[in-house]
Image 1 (cartoon, rainbow, N blue to C red):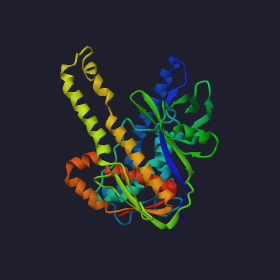
Image 2 (image 1 turned 30 degrees about the horizontal axis):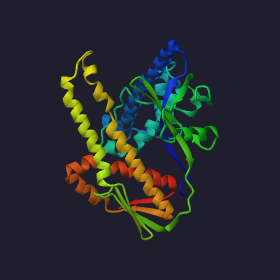
Image 3 (image 1 turned 120 degrees about the vertical axis):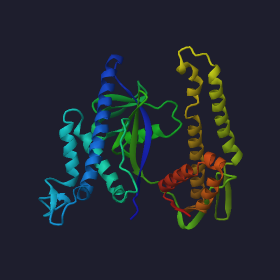
Image 4 (image 1 turned 90 degrees about the horizontal axis):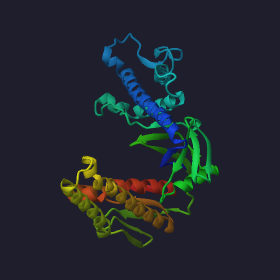
Amino acid sequence: MEKSTMTLTRKIQLLIDLPAHEQKEMWEKLCRYQNRCFRAANFIVSHLYVQEMIKDFFYLTEDIRYKLADVNKEEMGMFNRSKTNTTARMVFDRFKGEIPTDILGSLNNTIQSTFSKNKADYQQGTKSLRNFKKDIPIPLPVKCISRMRYDPEKKAFCFNMFAVPVKTYLGKDYSDKRLVMERLLRGEIKLCTSQVQLKAGKIFWLAVFEFEKENHLLKPGIIAEASLSLEHPIVAKANNVRINIGSKEEFLYRRLAIQARQKRVQAGMAYARSGKGAKRKQKALYKTENLESRYVSHRLHVYSRQLIDFCIRQQAGTLILKNQEDRIGIAKEQEFVLRNWSYYELQAKIRYKAEKAGIELIIG
């Protein structure tokens, strides 16, 4: 039976809600948690790999038991506890008192799940073991969040995270982050285990929400067909109605303009006054950082939204993306098109919005 709910992730910037002289201590606390997560993640994945490959490592004979299970539950078991608890207990004992065990438990469950999905590839040698880096996000279980509220004086949503008071910074917020937070406080949607990312001196909350799928009057018998064209980002038709969403000129013009601007800035850096060295010379370049990717992401959101709205208006319960393999093959032969068209990102946004609206997506 198809699930009636789905999850949504939003990236929200957080500020430590304390006086300036106390913020440094809280920041160091979060950095310590991140460091312990980085080390614990590498320990966990290494132990999991050794457990799976122990027979090959030690060339065990047939009369030696090597089943990865609790000896109290399985006669051939090797462990003195459950398989999941082996790595959990290992990191609990190693980092006791340095980081909350709720964080380590959540981290262990996530890595165990990911490892299980890729286990066959590891055994066949088609995929290498994942190496976690120092900027790993910190798991944020729901039980580690308390006192969630909206503060009208600060004009922000405030809560405690790992006993650290924080508040949201939404800026101009052209997305639905404020609306989602308001629905969370009203109890209309559910907060799931999230993550906290420390990046460039800033704190970002990768919040995961669970909510009911949209309920539209869709008819499974009505099928909408769409293709990611070279002349238009999306060409769609349903019920003898055809629409072109976006255009080649409209999408590429701004993107190529941004690329040209970045090249001019890079070329002019050699003649910029140094002042404070490289940072002063590259000041103009910093202003254009991620400008192209942000523009592309926004446009693809608009295009995919228009496609799903078209399907809803036509009551189409099924959406078929036609001939995508052929289109992608053509794009790969033309480097300019592949570099500037973003086929895969557009497909991903269509898939997410279709699931949210309850539309079955078929990629042909």
